[in-house]
Amino acid sequence: MQALLLAGGLGTRLRSVVNDRPKPMALVEGKPFLEYLLTQLKKNDITDIIFAVGYKGSMIEEYFGDGSKFGIKAEYSYEKEQLGTAGAIKNAADFIKDDYFFVLNADTYYNLDYSRLVDMKENTASEMVLVLREVSDKSRYGSVSTDGDRVTGFNEKSEEAVAGLINGGIYYMSKKLLGDIPDRKCSLENEMIPKWLDEEMIITAYVNDGYFIDIGVPEDYFRFQKDVRENNL
Image (cartoon, rainbow, N blue to C red):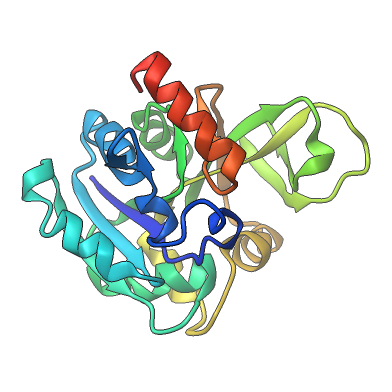
């Protein structure tokens, strides 16, 4: 199976503690964060990896090369300018061979059985499956509404400090959707998914309660390091 890892961000919020490398290459116990993510993908038989890179992206290619030393096949899609999440996916179109493929944020670790997304797609004929997670206070995030397994609202603002579902940042999507994404800077979360929902496209949700962390801010980066030492992630 094939996965596109979005690794082109500037990582400005982490710059105070990681300023010499792209955020996914931040060191954790002597290894780049990306190695932990790739280890998890390999456990799920996802070994065909496309890195969508931008800021200092050559450092990722220099480290992982063709991927053979890490048990994967690695390819690199370079952004000449910041393209946003959907723009980065569209920019990598020539590398995407599978009819359906995974998309992940390369600075996020989510303990997940990826086969569940494949099963959900097969059972629902959806064009995209989103991974959601439940939080105690959805007002801090853009929340997601569902009707059964089907997504009905995405990135919605809420003033209520109540429990709810939010985006987990992992997608299993049809290659056909690339044709809808414009050739410009474009957000998957703020533009394309709301557009597809307005068009009544079938988008389904898999709610996962596994370990989750985004190392985008120093406190969470340090927490992941602690979790690796204590839990052998």
